Length: 470
Image 1: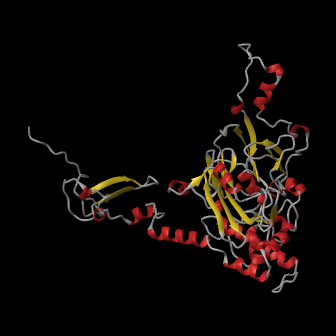
Image 2 (image 1 turned 120 degrees about the vertical axis):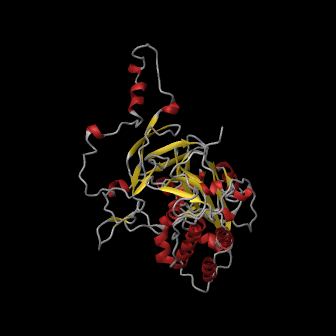
Image 3 (image 1 turned 90 degrees about the vertical axis):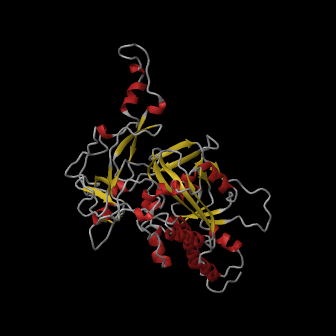
């Protein structure tokens, strides 16, 4: 029986636009076009091996058309130039900051003890720590934390002129327990019996749902205690702040949209901060900084700038990166942190952290490991300087009371709960541009800026010039 060759009008050695044999064919990402690729040269044949392997032989890479090049995803994270640039940035972060060194020299302080003494005058009081949402130790449950959260001002400013219902009306007053309504029915003693079987039935604690408010779009959604979402509703939100301006109407900085306009950014799911309005606690997993044991008289307690980057998980905000710098801006500690819960959004626009950072072999630690590391050099009397420091300590699950917060030292003209951004303070007071990278914030840059702001404040408040006298 003679071997028959199946033929078709399409089965030719080459297609239009190709000089060699067609090696692959597929639809474009939008499904409207048929994409093909062929050998770069006109050679054809049936030989196999590494010579015809596109991955092993660069010369056999197909010549891409203009549309193919457009649809191709470029991956250059591991290119030599990118790696060298990241290594250079890492080395620069480990060196003292020239700007901060210049600020310290302008103060002309005899020693670091004077700087420590000046900074202590800006420490936050215990009532301030509690009011601003810092984690504080519970008096009834030692070793556990309590966090008080005030109402979010965005809930009043997002829709300032939109008419609405009277939330104080009886039908809109929330119950003491804001759990899912089914739990209220199940927990009612009168409804404990199953209508058919006559047996008591309850929803397990881990599957009970709690109502949460999305911190981006302010919509309500439900999540179980184990972090499972009851709906997969997408989130449309504005990532920029509302900017009040006397010359122009109030608008969002991200898209110039009005306060009541539809969001300009798409989110896979709603996200929340992990704490609710009111008193939260007692909370487990927190550590408290310990006092120094028999410290020598000449030992400085320590002055550090702290900045943390967080990501959104099913259980709220979790720590993704922590950076600590010394008073001169030198990098002291920097580490990626593996979130314990499933990540919903890495918040890369602000955190600068993405899934690639964990997948490319970079060293990361657990939260417990980071806590142990920081407790080694951060003691109870160590001064920590940050901007919105309560958010950093919440993410670290650390109770620390010797805190200086630049958002409090440089208050917003509207007063609390409004706060000036670190970026605006750096521009107006230090003449520095920070947070300009489209890849997210640099945590070491933010921590250095906080220390720089406090050096600026000390010089202004105490009139420290080029000469210092005691």
